[in-house]
Amino acid sequence: MNALLQKLGISLPIIQAPMAGTSTPAMAAAVSNAGGLGSIGVGATDAKGARDMIADIRAASNRGFNVNLFCHKPAVADGPREAGWIEKLRPVFAQYGAEPPHQLREIYESFVEDDEMLAMLLAERPAIVSFHFGLPSADRIAALKQAGIVLLASATNLADARAVAAAGIDAVVAQGYEAGGHRGVFDQDAPDEELGTMALTRLLVRELSIPVIAAGGIMDGAGIAAALVLGAGAAQLGTAFVACPESSADPAHKKLLLGAGAEHTIMTQAISGRPARSLANKFTAIGQTVSRGQIAGYPMAYDAGKALNAAAKAKGETGFGAQWAGQAAPLARALPAGELVTQLKAEMDAALKRVAV
Figure 1 (spheres, one colour):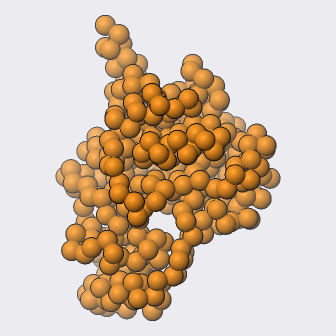
Figure 2 (cartoon, one colour):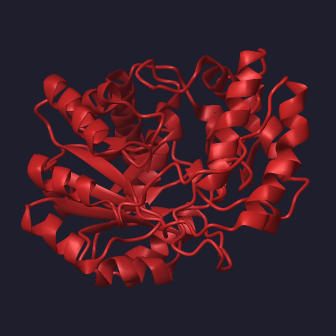
Figure 3 (cartoon, one colour):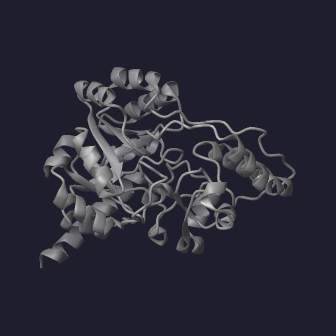
């Protein structure tokens, strides 16, 4: 067992990605019970909702788990840009007999400003807390560490990873460009180096003194083994768990993931306002017709996106959802989460034996 696994309190180098809106307490509990690290994403809920999710995990498992937080820069209103995005989407809403929102809301509060979420975490003290889109302030990090909580943070490039290490975070999640869902970029307006998981993982292992967790495009035990050979202490898998029965992904998302639609993924800002990798669908097609500057900022664009998805689903159209998936999506399988972890371990062991020969 490596030092990272000891710190995380797990026996397997398998971390189920938080995936706000898709992971569930049942999924996290099943993964943790199987020896991996289960995770929940609470960026889309408030402190009470997060506390309830934590309680649900603890009712099903006595193992540690990870609570993930969004640390994006708080939204700055841009009336003309938001109005323009509403008008761009108006004809699409009309196709489904609906009107777009009159005004876009900041539907998700960033942890950098959420005092109630911090107080809840300090009271509940989950074993692990992780950050996406950036880092909270030094005093928030210090408070969580003082409470005995192990901290993780995502990075997509060396500069952000160095900031993670300098902030005293215990381990960095190296999120490659292959990954499904939202890119963990700290500054979404800066050029994206689009580093793949293999290159990023190896780079961070060499340049940093803290443990590295590889993430992005890892779907089976062979991928986990490859990450370990690169020097990662563990691998984080998200898309691999989307088709599990414990997942809250809707049936249309799971059907697309388990069919030919899995062969096509696209990085888009159109759905939420931040770069995110999705299965190709009607919303990603809209994204290919507009420039980045036309799309409302995050999370206001997500307000419009969720409204459009709801309007379309009411008419039987499922192609406007946030159908997040990574580039290796065709390797997805519909297994219970705990069973999948067991299968991943067997595949990993076999792959490591092949490497050792």
